[in-house]
Image (cartoon, rainbow, N blue to C red; front, side):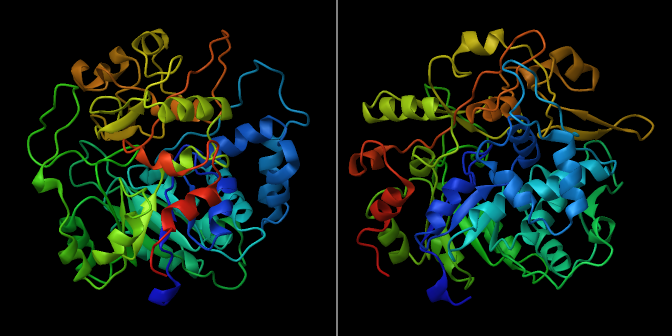
Length: 473
C-alpha cells in the first residue's frame, strides 16, 4: 500500500469490546482505520449468543463463515433463542491453556471472524484488529479467524511482537504456525501456542490476503529492535505515550510515584521520533493527540498520523454499556472525572488507567466486596511446577491460592480482576449462582480536553471530523 493510501487516523483498539464492530465500521466508513479489539472475543461472542443475539448480527456473520460445520457447533453450544432468563449465569467458555483444545480454537476463530466480518460490511474502508502480546495463548487462532474475514491491519502491543510477521505469512498460505509462550520458571524449555488450519478444514480455499502489522510500542529503542531484521520487522509502528488509556509501559529505571501514587515519567521515557522516522516505516503517535491540531502536529514531526482511543470510547457507537458511557461523559464534561494511572491495579504489572465512577471497581468498598476469583483467566501466567507440569496463576486470584503457587502475597495486593471488570463494562458481566453481579472496571486516557470541540453526545464521525479538521490530506 502506498504512503498516500495510509490512514491519517487510527481508532484505537480498546478492549474488552469497547472497540466493537459497530465502532470500527463507523470509523472505517469515513475512510480512516477502524479497529476492533481482539481481546476476549470468544467470551463476548458466547455471551451475546446466550442473550439471544439481538438483531441477529452474529448469526448473520456466522452464516458466512467458510467452514459451516464449525459455525454450527458454536451456535449449538451457545445460542439461546430469546436469551437466557435474567440473572442466569452465562455458560463458560474454554479457558486459555498450553494444552490444545479444538473447541477453544474453533470458538476463537469464529469469534474473530464474526467481529471483523461485521466491521467490514457496507463500505470499502480499512478495518484492523488489535491484540495483546501479553495474551500469547490466544493469538494464533484469533489472528487466523480475523484473516478469514479479510482484516486489513493487525495491531499488537503489550509486549514485543517479534514472531507475528512470520505467523501472518504462514496463515496467509493456510500453513501451520506457532509462537513461543513465556512460561515462568521453565528454564530453557520451549513452549508454544499454534494453529494448523488443516485441522479446521482439510482443503482451504485460495490464499488469504496478509494484513499489515503495526507494532504498538512506547520507545524508539523497541522500534529499532523490531526493525533490525526482516523476520521481526512490522509494517509500521504506533508510538504510545503514558497518557493513553488502558495499560501503559512502566517508567524506565526504578519506579517512582507522585503524591497521587501514580508513576512518574521522565525524559528517558520519551521516544526519539527522528530515530523512528529514519527507519523508513510509517508510524502514528498515540496518547494525548485528540485535539484539532494533533494530527497536523504529528505529521509535521514526521508521523503518518495519530491513533486516538478515548474520544471514540465515549462516542455513541462505543461498545461501553450506554449508561456507564453517559455517566462518564457527563462527569468528563464537567471536569469531574478522575482518571488515575494505577501502578497496582493490573495483574500484568503494567500501570493501568482507572476511571473513577460510583458503583464501579474504582471505589475501594466495591472492590473489597468483590470475591477474589479468576474464572476467565486471560491474564494468567503459565508457570512450570516442580516436575515439569504446567500450572497457571494470576495476582488477582485468591491470595492463598496465589501463594500456594509459589509467589509472595504482596504481589497480589491491590490487584483488580480486569477480565471480569472490563467484560462488565460492556454490559456482559457475569451473574454468579449466588446472585452476585460482577461490577464494571472502566478505563480511559487522561487527556479529556478534546471534549470542548465535540457535540454533547458525539458520534464516531464527529470525532473523525474533529480530529482531522485542518490536517493536511
